[in-house]
Image (cartoon, rainbow, N blue to C red):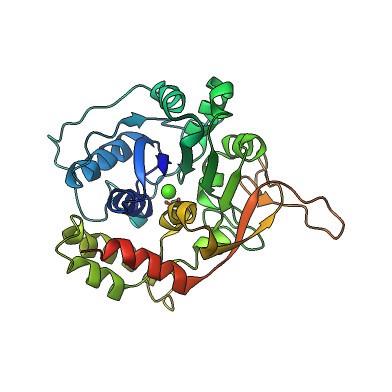
Length: 308
Ligand code: BDR
Ligand code: CA
């Protein structure tokens, strides 16, 4: 499957990049990098660094948005993801890489048409801009998968909002209202996609995995953050990897079909997502994940990350 990946690496986005490089069923055809967990320039360097380590430097990196549509800046989260988005690992300051212009998105859609799948696990700004700039091309894409929103539960970036929708709710609302064949994996499901230290240790010993030596330093950093915030948690959630895995393994989650709305301009509820599920309300076309089959998820995860 051919995937154009919008992301903000960030530890869980980075794991999704590593997984996509290692999974023989996924062909990454491009990566669009935006502000979010870290700044846009750091997210771009991190994605390029991972492609180089993974021997995949031919994949175009396309720098996307560096700020939300309506605001001059957005918060970044080095305390969760590290300064460069890889925990304690720093990208060498002299690391060189090539980037491609934003219009490469249109070129890739033209090239792959309805074979192309778009996955977005970052703030929504870059994907929304693509919908505004290339509406006819975006209709050609086969399907869209996004990580965002928190339904039936509190948020993580604010009491009511999940971080990706909180970062640029105007852009998120454009996506949930415009994208066809849309699947959302929200926080209420991704929070259960827990990676444990035992799993990371096993990967770090797999000499066939080119990312093995990065795993413990990166994830010990990530686990430490979650341990402080939620001491009972036996690991940490890998939101974005679950979103990537759902593309090829749709049965690892269950869905309901509704259309979502993101609240854009409200001091308290900014970025909050909701569906109308009152009795008798109209069902919608968006597939919204509501539960995770954890054993299946782990089995699939290990089949790629522990592959020899
Ligand atoms: C989402 O927010 C980001 O910080 C993570 O990478 C993930 O995409 C979880 O709310
Ligand atoms: Ca992300």
